[in-house]
Image (tube, rainbow, N blue to C red; front, side):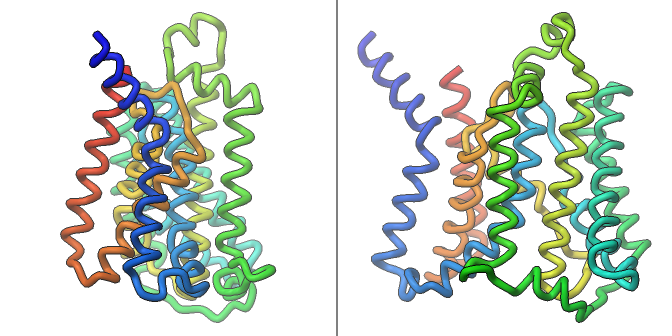
Length: 312
């Protein structure tokens, strides 16, 4: 009996704090064994690279919190990039606004399919993954470079030494954390993920909540697409956002949000994204092949899912 309780405690601790411990251990390892890891330029590079993943993962966490999934986020990033290029002639701000609107429309389409039509989230968003990527390539068949000063500044400038891309990610993390923890909508979202049938019987607007969640995920993916485009100073819908949905799901699951819904861990999601970024950077800096990164990520995902299952 004692051994069982100890095992439950250990698994519960790992599920809650394992991602934080892993980030600390990996950081300490790099600080000792990786040359120039503590350099300011390296920190800047790592944060800039992880920022779009964090933003997309925030939307994914909200969707998974409702016991859903959104596989279209990478394609939404590509669509945002193509829309920015199409409307850049009207100015940077109108182009960004149209890109965010495009993300919201794709999210709304996914929300309608899931909440109104009743299609399984994985099927609905898989269809959007394929269709939206194709639409992005129709709008912009090939890479297009630009020199718009506003977009270039968003992608490359800093405020008080912190890149604008990172600042945007920080603001969105704070906003989503407030939404989940301090608003009625956040509590309703968690309730719907915990028990959709009971939420419907208790009078919660389940359809509206699901629709809103998918719209938010689409908008956040579009934001990530705009930031990635501004950093690259080019729109490339063919490759932008490829496999981003997998990175986002990994960050969410490793961060402690269960695939069964009913819980959203915003800070855990951020730490999950940082862990995956640190892991990849560590293996690259030590001249290990990309295949090692993929295998390590697979092990971490399996461990996170196992811990979540054991805790239930």
